[in-house]
Structures are given as structure tokens and as C-alpha cells.
Amino acid sequence: MDEPKPKRTVAVALEYDPEASGAPKVTASGYGYIAEKILEMAFACGIKVRQDADLAEILAAVDIDSEIPPQAFAAVAEILSYIYQLNAAESKESIAP
Image (cartoon, rainbow, N blue to C red):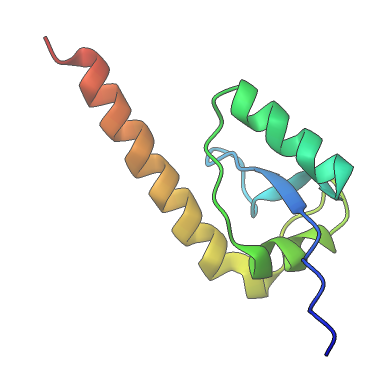
């Protein structure tokens, strides 16, 4: 019996400017080695990373500097909300005496 091949790593970086009109944009994406480099850079810069293989596959098909597709809005909004909450919690911790 054939064993399933392990999925290759996929990574997508998004940028969202709440001041600008429009949806978040894909700023980088890649598979395998490129994905590992994207993740390495994110971790080195302290950028929050969320694992969601299905969403990453959808977003990896989007051209760089293009807005995310409507079918990804709900999932990306959930991720952005999670990140905003983490950032707010970290801000409170750094302000606490």
C-alpha cells in the first residue's frame, strides 16, 4: 500500500492597511524552500504566524500585490482579529508596572 506523501510547506504573507480602502493583499507566497524562507523571515521579525493549510493553498494562488479573493474574507478576518487581540495583550503587558 502506498503511503500518502507529506504535503509540501506553503506560506503566504499578507498586508492589511485599515486606513486604506480594500481587502488585505498578498505580499509573498511560495512552496517548499521559498515557503520556509518566508516563515524564517517572519519568525526573525517577530511576525505572528498562523497555520491554516487550506487557506494558504487558496491564497498561494493569488498574484503578489493582489487583494485576497472574497471566499477568503471570513477566514482572513478571523486571523486578523486574532492577531489584533494578541498585539493588544502584548501592549498591555509591556505597559503594566
